[in-house]
Length: 454
Image (cartoon, rainbow, N blue to C red; front, top):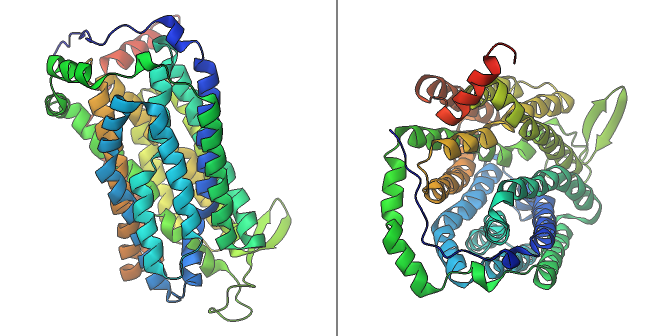
């Protein structure tokens, strides 16, 4: 099927409107990095916080950890389209500030809760008012010259990778030394600092904001939201990749809530399992041995996964160009699924870290590779609808994954969580190999590289 390029009725924005795009990118990057750094300060340690709130049974801790994560995913799924529509009408900068301030206030309140139901309620509200990365991407895309958008969004993503890598490490140290409640307050301060910097330094030209009346005319000319979605879902290739993308996001949200509980199994309990203040986990690296608190051990684990995932995300573009994006994604998925199986049998915390670090090395290539396939397979002019659906897959995984992992862990044991998600990833890999084709845009590049002389 030949797809014709569509012309947009949007008015041409003058070059002067983008004069400060580099400054915007810098301070939006800082906002994303500082905000997500703060989030990674506290969220990996939610199981320990739930235990501090009086839930001592391990299966109950698993259940409430999953429920708290799913609450965030549910509210994010319900509210993300609303915030997106408001951003188009009233500006992306207000939505970015809303996300940072909303997250900062709600995280501070989480540090004051006295019962687990209060924490879950605040996690639900967090999903409704936050969404930092989506707001940041929309702001950068709207205030950056078109030819620089791809490069700018790539740089913005490095803020996410850096925060995911450094946040758990720093958060583990803070939680172990100051306490988890104090970590929430520290995290809140980071969010509010990021909001202040964005408010002062980020500019959004009025020319980039579509007035409501003009937006309605554009919707009528292009076809409404439902019409755009119908075009996207009529492409079987895109639908299949959205399903694969859901499985890939699920691989993260399914297991992360139970990882700290697995760490607790490796810990020594000198004062009994009900008193975790002096629990230590043994880590041995390159002939050096460390006995560290569970919170610090959790930070080390998430930091290692963040590091290896970052390396993989950087490498996915050259691998996709050489091997094909379909093959890269499917191969990474099957290897990740196979690596999850021995995680369930890890004999020590050191082995647990090494295996999950290897998982991150391949897992980090899956989502950006799939996004590239979606971008190249979507009809011209419908990319916004396609990536809106992709964002829904992420929110749906955030909703289903934690409670699904918590359910499997509570019913079958923590070890089976890793086995189940491994099987899901291997199935997704088979689907990708059998039913997804390499887009013509990428296939032509592969053919040129395979030709003699290349």
